[in-house]
Length: 409
Image 1 (cartoon, helix red, strand yellow):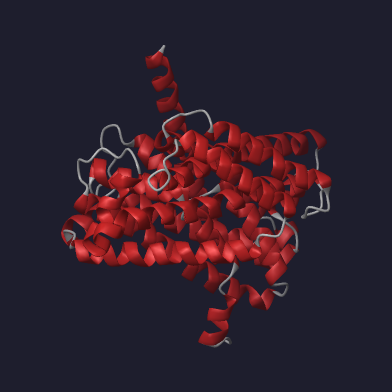
Image 2: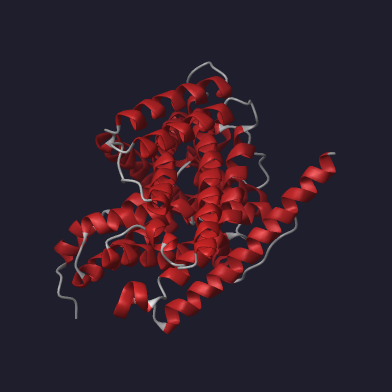
């Protein structure tokens, strides 16, 4: 029986909600809308897989932060006593996370611009860098807690609308359940599968969660509150993600997604002529929120791996934030199709994911690090299964990407 009341559990919602707000961004809207429009309900199983995976892995991250009072980067750096293995781990994790964050923030900025271009008469590769400069200023100043709360509220409103719209759309329930529980990979869908997983199971969120959990809780008995936070928050994120895909599969099957106006089609049953404006503002809110979190993910990772302070007082931490923002601005200014850029960033995250998962599962299974709070047999089994599946999907994504490049030559 729980020793905490429901009020105490509700008050505990925090670090997990930040993770949910981080992955419900333009990538989620874009990937799931495109998945539903292209493949109907067939890829709903990827949402279930991604949600369960995120719950398992984020719980491990939070538990590691609470028990050790250290970040995931520090745990990885201290996992191996041999100098060569330690250096390889630091380089491998650091490079994979930072490169993923660069692609991610470019996609976030492109997604944010994707919304605004239907309101302002400017091109996306002009709007995106302007938004990037705003993000750069916020990250440089370091005072964006109020803005994060405001954007989280806007994303929450968008989530409520999507769930309500899904109900109004009256999807085929038998097909929905089939899509959830009968895993299939339709022809030409592997890139979309990786994109959905990459936009939900975000590697840098493991580092953010470990750090935020250790700052919120410090006692082993508070693990129950952390688990409630993870289970509730991530499950809500999974419901939101599924709602977007289901609505798209019901109302947009066969439609080629090109801009925010196309996204608004699935909101028209509820919002009518205001759908276009709403989805534009929703994409802007989600994109800006994710874009702010992304450079922090890179900075928290490198801070833990290299022994920096976890704040802007450490110039290395601060300049990492700035560098990621600048690279994201340059990436979003290229003029590439924003939807392609978003999907590419999610796929790159899918390739990075197995590397970080292997380190996370290994670190949280070590008694030397967590003592009696290591993974149990079931958690280790699930963790390594997830790592294996992620490795397979990541490898498939890499092969698919190489084939696409070779076909273009």
